[in-house]
Image (spheres, rainbow, N blue to C red):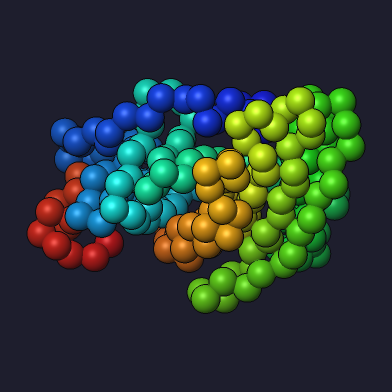
Length: 213
């Protein structure tokens, strides 16, 4: 997914999560309703992870191919980008996680700048999550003429195997940058990865019983 799909994020209608009526072997990507919000289960081949989206009012949008959530009035998007889209195979050898995340930032922001016909002033800082994983926080202001609703774009990214996992949020006149940043970080801290797909029915049954993942 590229940036152009996120430009209109604040104008999208968000609907309440679906309940899952799954078969015994259900390996779809979906959001499961929980007592504290929702659990996003991402079952992309060779890219399996879950994220806990917690809040008083969590509303996933399951009506499109893009994954959006409205969390207590803040809007976020979850994306995944294959590393081979922006790093050549010959350059992967010996690359650190931060180097890959920086390459993704440059690739994504250059694409966005092309849409706006303007070079973006991107600010970024490397982070270390509580899990020990490397992460990158980066942001830029929306150019004049494109900032009627979204004022800034914020990103928190991590590497998972051959992919970069992207949490993307917007700052509007009604929201604070720090609130959006902290929400992205809190969600990313909950990421659990697996070498095999997650079974949605098993996860849903565990949640109903009040068990952890």
